[in-house]
Length: 410
Image 1 (cartoon, helix red, strand yellow):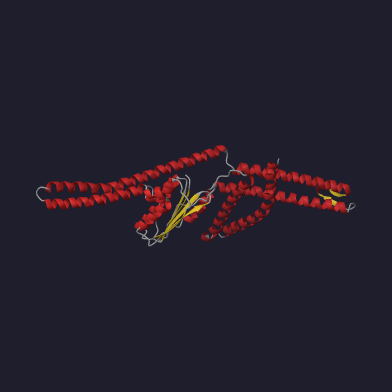
Image 2 (cartoon, rainbow, N blue to C red):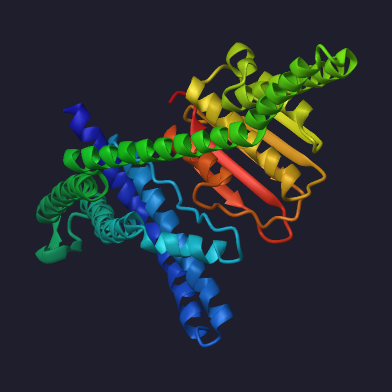
């Protein structure tokens, strides 16, 4: 019984508070919408308050989801803000457009509107209870005085007392009904059905699998290219040099010795390239000593000065650490090769919910874009494969910022 009464009482209290929040929210939305509509003829100005209204609506939707989840203990799925993958000046408008396309924002706003209507009724019933209590007190002190009680009309004495008690009981019953209505409406609007949850989980798993396949294909192509363009020609050259040294061994030992020395140096260079290639597949230090040590070694080898700030208390899963490592490695490579950066700042932090957040920012020329099959596409696929989020911001002129958030246990 207590487990049922407590959430309903909490729901009624939420409705009372929501009335005042709703009044303020309605005023803000009305002001932003009116300002946007009035200035719409001035396109650049009118769209700003309309965009703010849309973002405010998205915030209301998330507030409702968090409120309902905390009040009733419902399993409301996470609802992160959709962020545009673009890197040009259309990034912000595109992000706003993604909020407009998000159906959960509109469902949350509709839920808030319905709750505001219920909250208005709840406030009216609260006023009725206070009025009836006033009548009770007044009829006890002044039994001959007449009091007006809702539909009962003017009454005095015992009749006024009975009518006031009936009004209080009816108001309390209606408030309980509003609390139940709040719970059931919220459950139907904000909590997905089991079937919808299974479909969403299947879609997420399919997306992760596709991104993992795409990332693996990009990595395989890179390895093949590095072998074909680097190590393979060098080994062929070593073989040809040794062949020439063999032919000159009997007739010109000094020339043969020089060729052997040349082949020896080429072999050492090939071994170095193979080590770098193996490090690109998965560095041993990452498995042995963890992400912090691997990033320190990566920063030490970087051609661009790196300000490294890593604050991670423990080890994460191997896929997560590998994904973070290769995101930062690719960002440092791009900063050195393409953006002509003079400095790169790398920040890694633990976040609530068992997630790790990383940010790489350089002071280069910017203009980086995610192209299918490219390096950025590969690391974005790695991040998606472990259930993380990836963001690239690189306006022309810089700076370039890569930001990722991944679950520590994937």
